[in-house]
Length: 361
Ligand code: MRU
Image 1 (cartoon, rainbow, N blue to C red):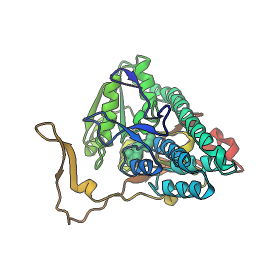
Image 2 (cartoon, rainbow, N blue to C red):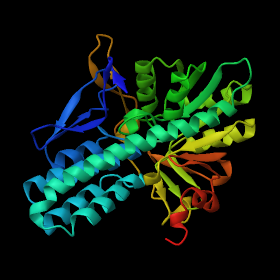
Image 3 (cartoon, rainbow, N blue to C red):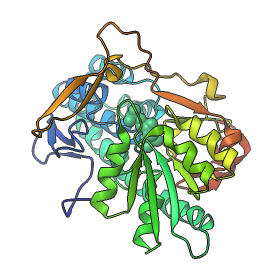
């Protein structure tokens, strides 16, 4: 996608240096800042602090984190410790563990001297595959969006959190079909829920604005009213982990939208690549849900009246707060899953039609 007219990915290796650069997502939407990461610890910290975030991007970042670690020392102990450090950064998005398992399988059998170069290559491959898979999600998802269009009306799409190109390397998951529709000249408009407490909806608004896609930001709690009123034609979200039975873990608040969509008779789609599907996880109840810091609710971040960034306290420091970051939408509320291979029912059988190689896995 483009930022201020320049084609940009969310992460890239720096030529001639053992480093990667990322877009610091904690600075958006107020300022666009590129950050250089020079070490495994830099990457782990960027994932923890959500300077990089979104399930596919977390996985790709972790792969580059391994490359950075091995550029300094490439013995078995260093590799295993780096895998462990990164695996502990965030628990819910399975893409992290998928990427780490893939680089481990690729690198561990190699002699130490060959590992660093192979790690950079493998991380680059994972990043490129993510771009291609998201592009293909856009192609398949577009057909679904078009099937929801009412003749003579603008297509009204609702999304939650940020499952756009900022959450991946490029294109996005849930937003890839939205960009495909816009690029195909389909008259469309996106309702973006704010997504408290971290407000990833503001990232969605920022990237839609960069691309010129018409959109409106709403408070999370307004989604039910819009669905009940018949304003929305289709809801599409991403996922952090899809269990083998089609249950979907995604940003907290997703389940409420799915319930409201079902009550209103509005299709509810989930778009995600293969790296988000966890065939080893039987159902949503087995998905670990991340609990994040209480200060994410106690403090509100933004610009003050003079345009300076800062935090405002909205709750006393000792106020009891719970901050689960994800919820699980049961497969029964999901109209279909959309992946790089096409569209399927949210069920074990449905997933196996797209990934038959997993049948005996
Ligand atoms: O906590 P985040 O911002 O990393 O979580 C990301 C999400 O939950 C997104 O909604 C998304 O659907 C998964 S990433 C495409």
